[in-house]
Amino acid sequence: QKEVEQDPGPLSVPEGAIVSLNCTYSNSAFQYFMWYRQYSRKGPELLMYTYSSGNKEDGRFTAQVDKSSKYISLFIRDSQPSDSATYLCASKTTNAGKSTFGDGTTLTVKP
Amino acid sequence: GAGVSQSPSNKVTEKGKDVELRCDPISGHTALYWYRQSLGQGLEFLIYFQGNSAPDKSGLPSDRFSAERTGGSVSTLTIQRTQQEDSAVYLCASSLKRERETQYFGPGTRLLVL
Image (cartoon, rainbow over all chains, first blue to last red; front, side, top):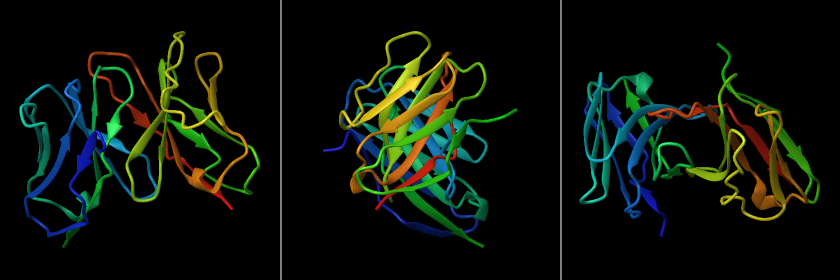
């Protein structure tokens, strides 16, 4: 079993929809949780960085972590065609050090 | 400023040959990571360098894989006697060790082993 499991895609939504992306993890030592966005043939870029449980909002993006259920979510409001990309969740035990990634969910937002 | 750069961007090699992949991190970044991404999958951690500390090599899949970081800057990932299952995108990231560590990724090297 992988330490970080991500809902498989692909996901296709109309422009303006609310998107929910989800992951679960099994390692109780994970304390830091990230969401990355990866455009085709590019490296991932960090979107959200959360420590422990709770919500974090940044513009149209909201990250949620529920450590009791080991559940990680990313919500995108008012989705735009430019949000079309692969989204990767990741977790780590310490602030600096290796991250463990999910397999990614490919999102397409149709105009 | 300049981001993380990697070279070559693409590499095609024959099974059994050795390859070297290069990563130039962002200037001043003390941490450097190598990850591997197979088609349609997430990133798999390979190795982590932090300053002068001993590297975390726990992700290297076999002794055919090795990495060096010279002068705390440029890093080279070497794969000896390449196999077809080594075909993947090899990604490098660098970061500053701070309260909220942000890893900045390069564009990757696409390796194809025939």
